[in-house]
Length: 114
Length: 110
Image 1 (spheres, rainbow over the protein chains, first blue to last red):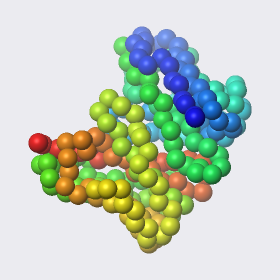
Image 2 (cartoon, each protein chain N blue to C red; image 1 turned 60 degrees about the horizontal axis):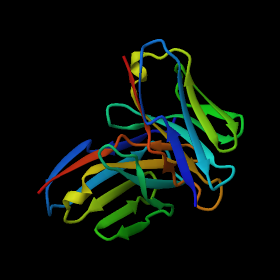
Image 3 (cartoon, chains in turn orange, blue; image 1 turned 90 degrees about the horizontal axis):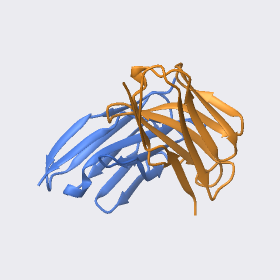
Image 4 (cartoon, rainbow over the protein chains, first blue to last red; image 1 turned 120 degrees about the horizontal axis):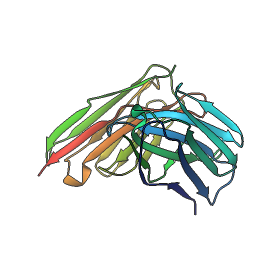
């Protein structure tokens, strides 16, 4: 069966510090991968998505970046965090064939920037 | 770009009352999906609608996809306290992007 792991679950970072959130998927190959942010417990904002290794599409201009160094690994990074980067970050995957489109979410990473 | 609007933002009901949330897309969709997020949790997939005019039921939940494939609704009959959470619709156009609505937060008073 497929599983998705996301870490860390919680982190508190000072303004200006770097960020690295990691997400890995197991039990499948060539998934579509997504990073969403949820601010103030509300809507889900699509940040990045990837259809393959090294292929990243950015949806919102910001100081965040994403990378996909391996087929089932998706990383969200920042060189210098802003206060506005606080939120709940969710990684998700979906298969590229069959029931494509249904997203499976990780448990999320709650980031507080102070 | 593609936008998905969802109303209402909040809904408070007494246990046993019905609940409906509505979703509208600015563009025609290839499919629409519904997710539920419990407080403190992550979104969990409920259902996907693909065909124009499609209606699907899951126990007390009824999902509809409009004829023009631009709107959808989720109706819960006789709500229970276990229904609390935020319900999101998410629309997919012609790409791999899935755009979420802002969600409807449902609270149920026992």
